Length: 126
Length: 272
Image 1 (cartoon, rainbow over the protein chains, first blue to last red):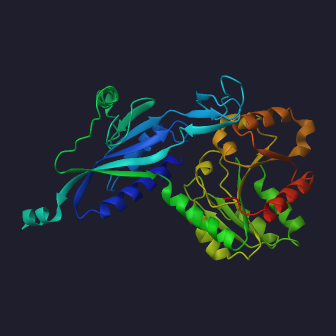
Image 2: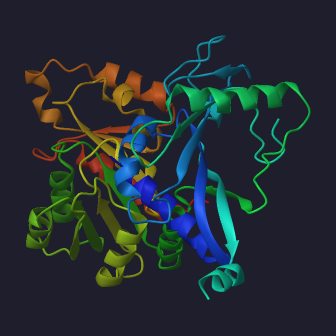
Image 3: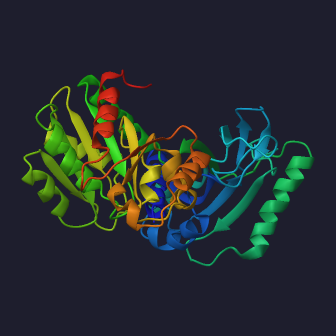
């Protein structure tokens, strides 16, 4: 269940980003990019998300996950092919020597914030 | 293509979920997917947040913090000319037994230090300490793997001498530890022949990210239906560069090859 650690890392990064804002902000959406070979089960992430973000800056935020298909270049025949598993062979020459080009991504792409300038909030509360 | 986030729709699937635990159902998913398909066909589209909204492009690895701490550990090891090895396997493959024998047979020639990772208890650390090797036990609690910050803390306590070898025995788990760089020089995956030979196919990430595979409990080979060649073939499908050493921590067979490998790593410059 390393997905829990993953979510904690996401919370840390988002909290740091929010702290940099000179305003009162609410996080509305986080966009993640997860490759098919990243070793993360999106279903697990989804299952753990609600409990893990309780009481954090992400409590109300929506999480969107953009999946990236895995592709590799065969180191023997230079063919470019899609793969589902690390143990997939090159469909042309059968070699297992390959360089994975995409599909290992595990990134926070972007965060959408709803921003309310600090002075506006101060005025409203006065 | 979306001009804001660069998403292209090609080969990308978008899943959305919210903290209520209820998935944003198929409706929301289709809306998102629809936007992406349109974007791929037409001119660049910008995700247009409302005036009070801001889109921050973070573009950062989720494990960025761990990776940076791991690099810090790596720098520490390199500065002190320490060779650090991260031992990973499923529970019961014999990681601690291999370490015990290694420390016993090579402890007079090389200064060793051990970081033990387990969810609970100090049993492994006690076994290592019994032989006189400095050891720090890290209990991860509910955690299923060691992270770079835990190793960093353990190193502060251990204060390993220059020129020494640090073994990091990870939590017994063939899944989660594969994602977390600890700053080690090499990752060593241990498999015992009482396990299935298809483990590399079932847990490819761990075999993919390791440089050496120790095949333990070789003394039991006559009593088991274990296809050694199949194990190696499966592992090479996942990682053609993986090296293998067959050994038995119980009888000591093959341990010399492991020591030779360790020595070779120690004398080579740190990989970039």
